[in-house]
Amino acid sequence: MEEREYKDWLSQYTDAEECLNAFQNQKQFFRVNTIKTSLEKFYKTSKLQSKVTTYYGAAFELEEDIQIGKTWEYFLGLIYPQSLPSILVSLVLNPHPNDTVLDVAAAPGSKFSHMAMLMNNEGVLVGNDFKKDKISALYATINRMNILNCIVTIRDGKALGWKERFTKVLLDAPCTALGSGQSAWQRWNKENSDNISRIQKKMLFSAYDALKPGGELVYSTCTYAKEENEDVVNNLLANVPNAKLLDIYLDIPHERGIYLKKCCRIYPQHLQSEGFFIAKIKKGE
Ligand SMILES: C[S@@+](CC[C@H](N)C(=O)[O-])C[C@H]1O[C@@H](n2cnc3c(N)ncnc32)[C@H](O)[C@@H]1O
Image 1 (cartoon, protein in one colour):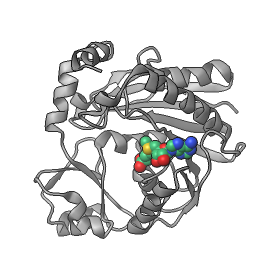
Image 2 (cartoon, rainbow, N blue to C red; image 1 turned 90 degrees about the vertical axis):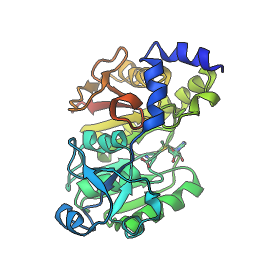
Image 3 (cartoon, protein in one colour; image 1 turned 45 degrees about the vertical axis):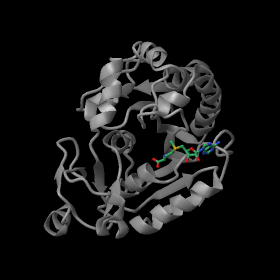
């Protein structure tokens, strides 16, 4: 696709110039792993030049130009490099220590390890992924971050085979990832989005089946196409009478969903970080 064509397409969602330019001065964020350290101790001992974000006490902005994945803090599992919108996804699901949580597409484990931290390493956290090579990355995260409340499974997210087992479910779906890289649009076309949308719809039905009545599910992607976002959520809402879309309250710059106004769209220009779509759904009792 030509750049001009992409910008025209993107303009239906947001300011295309602003959105593309935002990739040029993206900030680096990381999350402190309070399973291994406390925020107070991290403040006292870390040599990283960073400042805490105003949005969340465990999210920090890196203020020096270094490879964060080569620092002691990273190797020791004291931090997890993670974009700010990605950090917000687990906060929206808000898992507690007494929850039984399923992460349908968990690898490499950024949101998964954050959820373990929010659960104080208690309760039950099941991390699933279908790609065997990615599972090893998930195990590495589990070890590095010292996650103890977890079980790893390898199931096809389109046919998980779990019925009403979890109080909370996260489906951070495979997607065209337009929000995560400056050049992702060069590989994008509508046919890609339509194909992946069909997979996402099946995954969302299967994830919803795994949810207990009264439970809550978060659906997220790091892309903009409504085919992979609102249309996927709407397909569930239209076919499952007891699925209810919940409002998301985020005290950050963002836009509302295209026609599902309770959903949240974060573009790269909002936080100088990744673009994300987040929807929250409740299963009726
Ligand atoms: C957006 S990434 C997930 C990122 C992860 N949630 C995180 O925050 O680190 C999407 C994941 O979906 C997985 N995936 C793709 N198809 C799948 C399927 N049919 N069932 C389960 N997982 C699948 C991919 O292997 C990939 O790890």
